[in-house]
Length: 108
Image 1 (cartoon, helix red, strand yellow):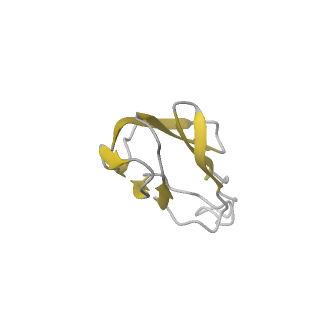
Image 2: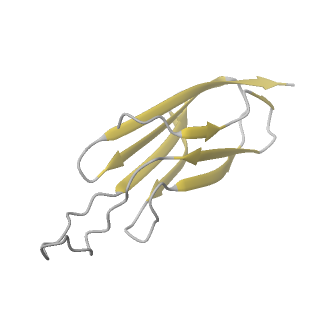
């Protein structure tokens, strides 16, 4: 997936304090229920898996289904005890994978 997502994550957080991660992923999320102009079914192509980890430790994951709209917008909370690199990863039905990472500093 070549389009970078819109990502909103604070670069610095306080230890043990919850903060929000917001991500908007540009993807058509084709359900597989529509038909083209000739009447053939349009192949399903949705982001089916989203994972977030910090230094290899999972902090959030989701399985997405066809009811999710195009360009999915995900918001979730995370608490960190130490600084690290957050990796956000998603995979669609065609096997295309998107990744984004950001370093987060934990203070106090």
